[in-house]
Length: 194
Image (cartoon, rainbow, N blue to C red; front, top):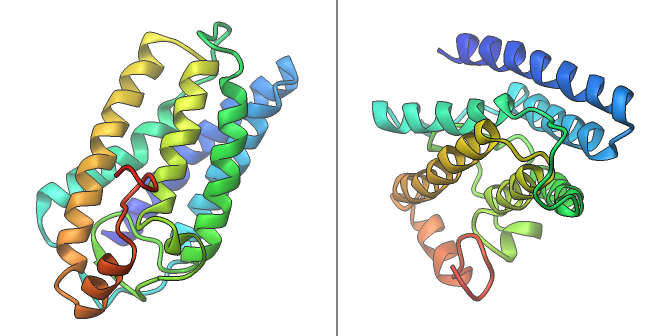
């Protein structure tokens, strides 16, 4: 399964990167280039992830993970932007996403899985900084490149992130180390809010 998910991710990423690099060449939109680079970083860390000590075997977890991972690779640059300054949210989201990926390192997963439980750097602020940065970056993307297709992908991705957070915590809470971590870091995605 891991080989096929890696192959599918590589194929979708290739199409995604091509469209965004092409958009950068045609429009000089740095947000397209930046978005392509940060998604490339995420794909690389996924392909180089460490082996887990436990993985969810629940088919629903796998379905939600695949939808939430692969749907954003269907986002495409558009001419119209409801709020063109959303581009700045893309940069901010990409910055936090980079810090989160570096903090997570090779403990990257698509489905709920236990590798090394990370509690430092970005993981001292919220329990799911990578998802929080995705929310920020993809929100900026849809504001900058607004279309019905992108908005639909956005809604599905946001629902998927919410489900993934709950399902991952349910899987990881079987470990006493993660329960202690949840007591120290109270917020899942947004400090002092949620």
